[in-house]
Length: 326
Ligand code: NAP
Ligand code: GLV
Ligand code: GLV
Image (cartoon, rainbow, N blue to C red):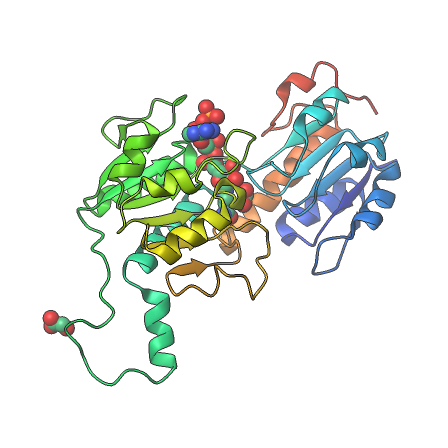
C-alpha cells in the first residue's frame, strides 16, 4: 500500500506528478491556503505532508498527525515549521535550498534598481497621463553604480546578491557574524557599520527568534537619509511600524519589499500608501523553471523520507537516528 500524503496546494506538475505516482496523495485544489480546520482533519492519517510557507506546522498540527514521518516544505525558508517539535517527534523536515538562489537574488537586484530609479512611480506617472515633457529634474533617483551595498545575511542568496553588485561596480559590505565569505566578493563588517555606510541595504537572513524585528526604529535611525532598504527575506525581520515612521519622516529614502508582515499586506495598509515604498506580493522565486525545480526537490525530499532514507535537503538531520518508522 502506498503511503498517504497530503499536498496543501497545486504545485507545478514536475513535482506533483512524482508525488501522485509514488504515494496515495490528496491535493488541496483551492487557490487560497487550505483552511486550518481542514488541514487538522486531513493530517490525521497521513505519513507525509507536502506544504507551503503559508501553512503553519506547529505542535497542535503535529499532535493531530500521529503517523506523520516527513514534512516537505516547498520553500527554502522554513520559519512556518516548528522544526524542534518535528525533531522531538522523529519527523524529518525538508526544504528547497539552492535552486532558487539566483532567481531570488535577481529579484532582489530588480527591486534595488527599481527603487533607485523610481521605476514603479515613473510607470504610474506615464499611465496617469502626467508625462508632459522631458525634464532636467524629472523623477530623479539614485545612481547604483559605485554605491555601497550592504548585505545582511551572507548565505546563498546574500552572496548571489554580492556577485550581481560587483557587475555594477558597487562596494559590497556584509554582516553575518557566523559566516566567513569570500573577501574578494564583499567585506565583513559589524551591524552598525552596515547600517551607517550602506546606500542600499538588502536583507537575506532567515526569520528566527534572533532576527525578528532585527531592523527596528533604532537600526533604521542609524541608516543614511538617502538609503534604500530591500527585503526579500521574511517580513517580520523588519518592524513594519518603525519602517513606516522612518519612510514617512525621511529617515531613510525608499523601501522595496517582496515580503511583509503580515502577508498578504491589506490593500489599505499604510506602507502601501507611501510613494517611497514598493510592495511586491512575495514573488522573488517566481520563475517558471525555478518553481519547477523547487517542486521536484520538495517531491524528492518527501519520497526519500517516506522510504526511510535521508532527505536530499534536510533541515533536521539529527532527527534521522530517532525517526518515526512506517
Ligand atoms: P542561507 O544560505 O541559510 O543564508 C542565510 C544567512 O543568514 C546564513 O549565512 C546565516 O548564517 C545568516 N544569518 C542567520 N542569522 C543571522 C543574523 N542574526 N545576522 C546575520 N546573519 C544571519 O539561506 P538562503 O538560501 O540565502 O535564504 C535566505 C532566506 O531568504 C530564507 O531563509 C528565506 O526566508 C528567504 N527567501 C525568500 C524568498 C522570496 O521569495 N522572497 C525566496 C528564497 C528565500 P548561519 O548559517 O550561520 O545561520
Ligand atoms: C520563499 O520565500 C522561500 O523561502 O523559498
Ligand atoms: C538623454 O536622453 C540624453 O541624451 O542625455
